[in-house]
Image (cartoon, rainbow, N blue to C red; front, side, top):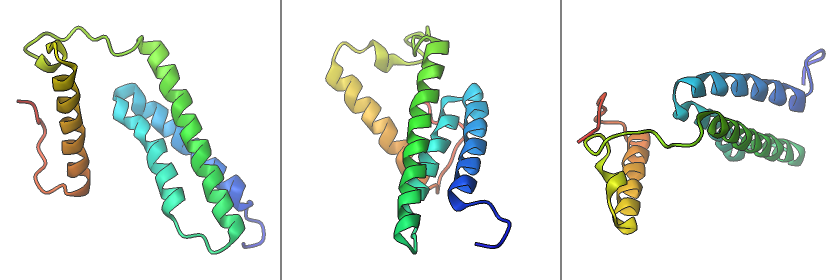
Length: 130
């Protein structure tokens, strides 16, 4: 490392603190903003590290990011009192289904659909409602 630069762990933690602030600000707008911390953890775990100490640092940063994600998510849940929004049947008919199997498969399909869009964003639209 160049002379006068902060230690790598300190620099990583400063970057993580900045990402936490950005995730909280983004989370005020929409829940998906909180996923920045999970993304950071994934990058740290998937990045090649030339030394054993670099690998340990990456794991430490990833675990710290995931712990912060859980804490921020819990705080957001406490502030918003969960997900009990009063949407009508027309808005979200799935939540009114009696069968847990139907609800589970529908929500899994939605998550798979959005995961596919993250990997293959060929046809993006501003609204994917039915």
